[in-house]
Image (cartoon, rainbow, N blue to C red):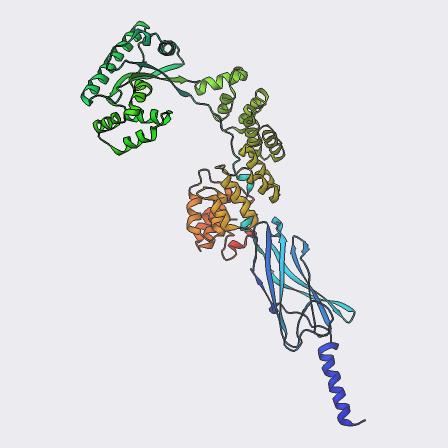
Length: 561
């Protein structure tokens, strides 16, 4: 054989072995970068992207490599979605990596977060298929641990919506009667004083004065003159009507032995142009638009009267239909109906709950902070008033706050069956769905509660669990809660988060833990120490969480744990 030819064949074989024949070398961790690293919880998941920069002269031409991410934690592991890459000589539809030039590969990672994953490691596993020969290369670690701060979002701490009672201790009632006068006269006619309207007012005032549960707050007299004639004449006329009406009322109160009636006030209006305008606007007078135009055109009352009188075609109609209604005195009694005191309501509930109205029962439950007593009262409300959705909704709220979410959902559903359009029970069903990680059901329920004031806090947690931090911040608004502060921390608005946490009325272990995280993110060691100490004091389990929390990895917190 020619020596030159033999050398060429040998060299070709060497090249072939280099590009195809040899086995794949081990992958190095240096080839890969992970974003983010450490991993981080977003919503309810742990997403990341691993980018591999494969060097030249590495990826064998006739090999395909399946890369599988493995998250190892707590003596177990979860495999992610595998991806396959291939050399230039492999037939297939996978991403090709050049032997001579190398290449870049992207490996998406996404796990459903579990609390035990907080202390974890992310590895890549490599399975090689080279001309039908299969072998496995050593795994490489590409990320270490998970920042699980977002997982602190807690739907169970959101306060469900209350279906409010309509109880009012003081209900104001108004009783009134009009006494009409003839044109240009101020004397009280007996026919007016004996009208059903006036006699009924006298009876109402007398009855209120004799009822301990009612209190006459004020009696007022307003007297009017119709806007024809001179202003001076109308002023004297309206004043005389007010004087005569006041004298009559005082005499009637004395006759009925009504001595406690608050304040008696009296006023008069010489020319009731405002009343005139309203009556004309509501009338069927053919030229009323013209009359109203005149009223708006002239501000001087005497000019107004003259111009309206010039409308000869309608003035007689005004004189017959409108003006007589403006010659009157109106007597109005303001009466406060005094309801049961808190003590009386509690006593009535203890003695016989059936003596209380549904609103009194619902109000009774607001007089205690004891959830067990609230539950008892709301249960009584559902038994005595089964057709009122509010009792079932509020019972569900207490069950939710006690952590009995199945019972709460049953109560909320009963409320919704009674009143399908009630937004409170719809929102509250959505909260239970959030607790159960059913985001689709939660979204549907929240949609039916649109416009409810309390919905913002629930939506905030929903968006946090979706991983939409900006939407969560907007939904929370000015809410002062751990969840709202968490959204602000994740949005890197640390100043606002600190202000929110400081404004929480009843801070708990999570409040102080979040404040410690703020300390870590703003490099404030003292803030970390003092708040972690308080968090662990309130909830000892926070010690284990803090020990594994990468938020504190750059700080020595051993003296606190």
